[in-house]
Length: 386
Ligand code: GLA
Image (cartoon, rainbow, N blue to C red):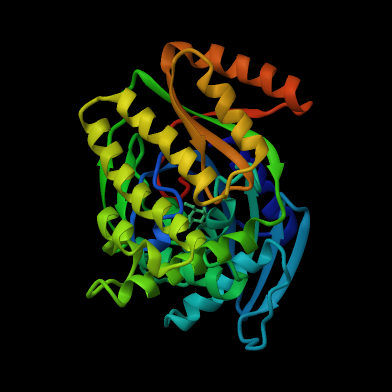
């Protein structure tokens, strides 16, 4: 048993004087396919081997008592309270999932829960989805319900969209539920079907955390989504049957560029290009062509920076440093943007030197020491074996 699990069980016993069951849900990386999940596109995530754990035991009533060891806080609420409003903190993810599980027809038992994790919070590694999925998995299991992983991912996304108020796509919740150890997945965000993509073992996936978290992220995220909807509305008068940017080809977008404002066109150009890059990157990895995959990752960053405008100075700096270092196939910002991590595809033999040089150069330029993590693709959520 991992020491984090032992500590969590001890904390649960101390808080609630009984034995818990333990559930774990991982954070994620995304090789390529950024800001395309809510456009019905293709993404290429993998789970991290870093997670949020939920220790849980049922209660005879309909209360949920939540304790987070990460935030050092206790929150208590009633599952029958239909006037629930978000509090603006971590507990919203759990309360939202409980509300939307019940709305989907699951009758939940009350429960005591304690959360712990080794996943950095706010670093763009989807700790929020990991909170949601660990809680959802745990609540379903103690309520005697079958866990359908894709269904759970959809309910967690609904909770984040409608209770927390971030109109995120399905990628983070899907991969936290359905990841396969040792592989990335090429996920079709329309059909929610996925296939494994193997990454040549001679390469490493290295995450570099800028350590900055800009406040605008959630508002800008929702604004990008609206821009995409505007682009679809403009194209819908010209392209029959289009319901998402996934349905537009690059040629069509160029032909009808005048039908939308310039900024909306640039957002759409990122999305349509990024979907294509993701499919090409999957083909490149299938063929063992790391150079091509890295080239596409570089193009992804430029498009996110210039057309989608979700990067920031610290992410751009990190990408520039990475590209100047030996053994780097490709580097780009990862996730929603405005801070968080870059993802770097690096020759395994150069990965340690890469990490060292990145720490030194980023610290010299900013005064901040970045966190460097090597990603070992882990499995999706599940009950921890005690
Ligand atoms: C966040 C969202 C995801 C996805 C990414 C950008 O992580 O939660 O749904 O849109 O940003 O690719």
